[in-house]
Length: 304
Ligand SMILES: C[S@@+](CC[C@H](N)C(=O)[O-])C[C@H]1O[C@@H](n2cnc3c(N)ncnc32)[C@H](O)[C@@H]1O
Image 1 (cartoon, rainbow, N blue to C red):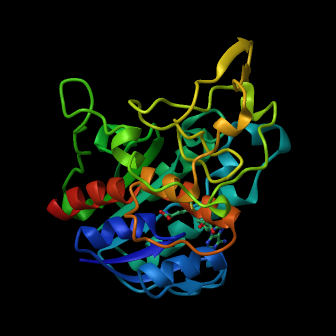
Image 2 (cartoon, rainbow, N blue to C red; image 1 turned 120 degrees about the vertical axis):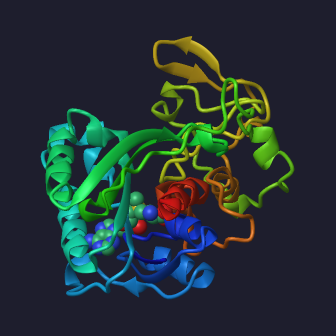
């Protein structure tokens, strides 16, 4: 099975494809650091704005997670975000690649008030030639040690007359135990100073709890070092008022997760190397689809 990958980032989705035995014949991203990481770990990628790419090769599968910041609730007041229109580039590629299947992923904001008009337009456009299924998936339900809810959309060419069914969760009550922080990062070596974002804890950062316990799964790994969750070691933050937490002293007992710990929580193998300055690394990792989730979905497509 051959795939075309768009908005490929550092390669979270595509590592899942590779692990499922799918050959990525074309990948693209606009970010130079993401492309460097992709190239070093997975192979060739076209470094360009997608709008400048005139033609895409034919393949069996098209994957592409267009950027999602534009659908965040915080954006509502600032008006339309041009990044919200990148799904039209995905649609352009769909008409050229003519795959049997496609997969895309986005934040839950896509199905909120802020993104719903775009979501409906996507379903309409993609639905002309594809039977479209979508589902909100929490990564922890499939063995990834993290609360991470994302909308996955899968299309199957109508002429195939097949229906895609999302695989049932494998972890959670009545199933396998969730994979917790201890199991995932408990035996990682102490990070070096330059592997951790350490520019203090603002009131905004401490407006909610940022520390999960060792026996729990992680908070969502976001595309920013500043917003990285706290490492589970040391005392728990104390809730002192509405939207206000403090970190019991000394503050040095608390630190954010290193970018390498974030990558492992995202289900990247420890050998996967990230390139760029510290913030670029956190961003690539937080932007990624956990490879394990990508593998689970594309394996189900392969089966179909
Ligand atoms: C949500 S991330 C996708 C991450 C990827 N699926 C992974 O698993 O690593 C979206 C990506 O779209 C890229 N991007 C944003 N605008 C773009 C454009 N105009 N052309 C190509 N890539 C773009 C960003 O650099 C970012 O890497």
